[in-house]
Image 1: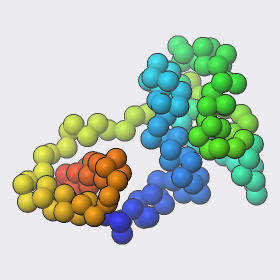
Image 2: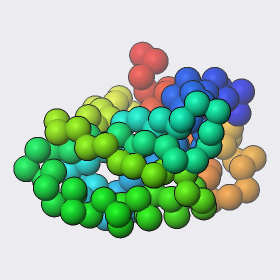
Image 3: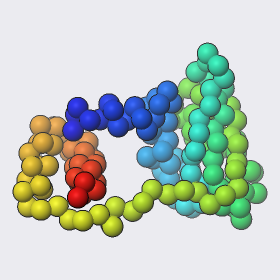
Image 4: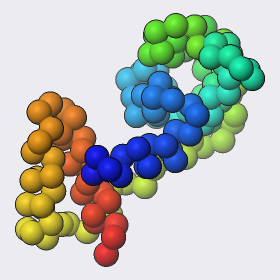
Length: 146
């Protein structure tokens, strides 16, 4: 899995960096569960040659757009707290239902052999939370192969 991660992460994040990945994975924690259900981050665009003053594009359910418009200063603060500096200067709201990843509930269960192989692969990772996340990723990758 360690050999596959740079390739997978590189394709998923491109030049957006790890901060963008954290925005995607922790979006509901950043904006709150209520607004997190109605929104999803789509794109982070920095001005050419800069790593500040980016525009974050967010998909939002049309019925919640006015509420979110009033909360933009707080949302910018919360997003910038994730980066640790003033990375985002503007948020662009696009009114359309946020796209959600396909639930992993539809994936087939792993065989006992596949499960034990996955546990063995992730056992070398000492951190419990990271190891758990890698196991979830490994299950999704393995279950989608057949």
